[in-house]
Image 1 (cartoon, rainbow, N blue to C red):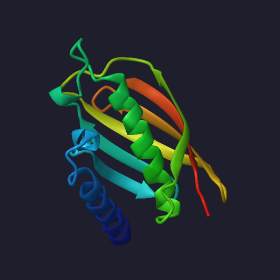
Image 2: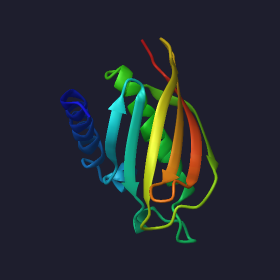
Image 3: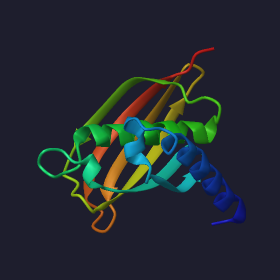
Image 4: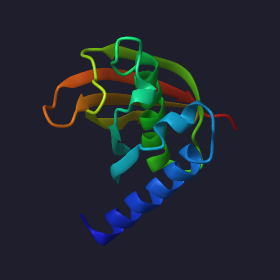
Length: 145
């Protein structure tokens, strides 16, 4: 990585930590989420699956995976337009395998199209060690103004 790319990743993590660590609400579940790479319209993140994210079957809750699609899609859009997080108008997720407590997930997001009013992203969530695909999602955001 170049020095500039490293600086961009550090700055993006500082912003993410400021948002996720300064709340006692639902988003605080993702305080451990880290951006590992950021480019033009792309973001890679990493998250350790913790017990506070589990469903009754001791797996990562589907709602937590949906939130990762939301967070990663927004981050990818903001890599192109930092002042334009938008609001979600559509989010869909396909669950392909379960994520166990203690596993580390890699979340990759890519902006497919960014217009004046709508932004479209694709997100893939996989287990770090095996590469097993856990979920895929699409996220659409609306921008006012």
